[in-house]
Image 1: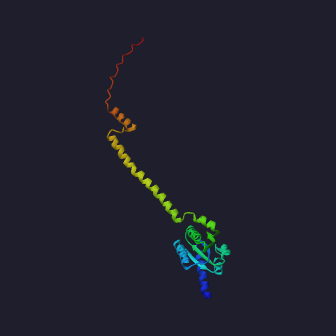
Image 2 (image 1 turned 180 degrees about the horizontal axis):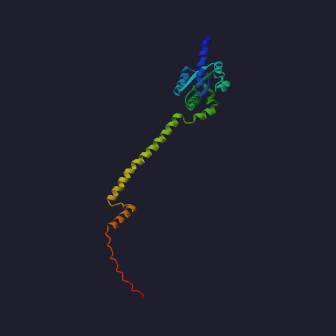
Image 3 (image 1 turned 135 degrees about the vertical axis):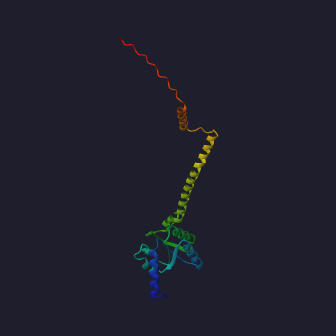
Length: 208
């Protein structure tokens, strides 16, 4: 039997952990085997979550004055609480899938996400969202794709310029119109201009 000091230590520990968490899921269970309990714990651990079977009286005290206080009414019967300081979507995916796959053992009681109490349908809706890691992966794909396009364009510029220069050398491509105009002007300036002889002016006889 736990001593009062031990109970207080457990209470302080779970209170601190819940206060530092972003979301939690409350489940119930019956006819639970050791293997199935361990399987659930392992999946929660992989999702970055903590899990503990709690006494309802202790849990009610632990969540009093916290964002989880609204879930006090669901602390009845046999209760397990899973919580995480990480992405709530990952925890929602893990709990909703495991409860669904093991409906003969586990029941979903309530979830608390960002201080709001949510039911199973809302948890499943959250679970359908991409996780933080998935969003980062998609974002990196977009960034890398854009970067690859930029590199392709940059690499294409000197390559296309070289093709144009080669075609000009082979006479396949005419020089631009501006260059032609410049050449004509230079040719005009290069041709010596003959100076016309000064016209002899005859004196107009005076009307006198």
